[in-house]
Image 1 (spheres, rainbow, N blue to C red):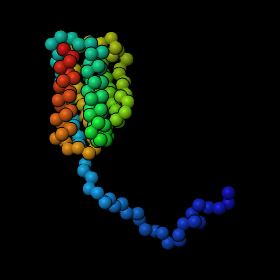
Image 2: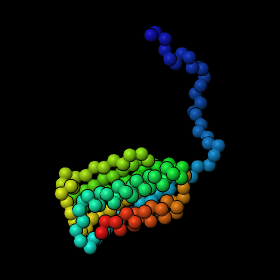
Image 3: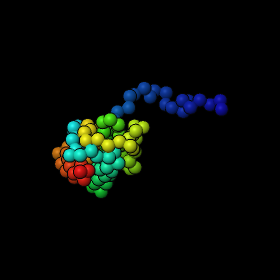
Length: 140
């Protein structure tokens, strides 16, 4: 091809594009908390994984059912072993450290974050906290 693509552009198009939006968009709602969890007795890694996978799924499904947009849902569990969960509104990605599946413990640090577009921070906070508490109560 001997023809150059820029030959078809107007000669004097040196204007910077301007982005304008006809509707007002709000900032995303962000829920982010860190908890030091202490269980009454040692809990298996599988129970922790099930509870937190349930939480991510509940937030994702509630968001989708109400026509909101998930920016990101993230969970990090730090203890003797580590667990990472994440979703952008579809599947839930799960990663863990090598010894996770053989692990049980009575204390962990839990970090959770949900970023959702289309709702208020207050609404997201209420839904996320209520769901997280219910999922964690199922561990013991």
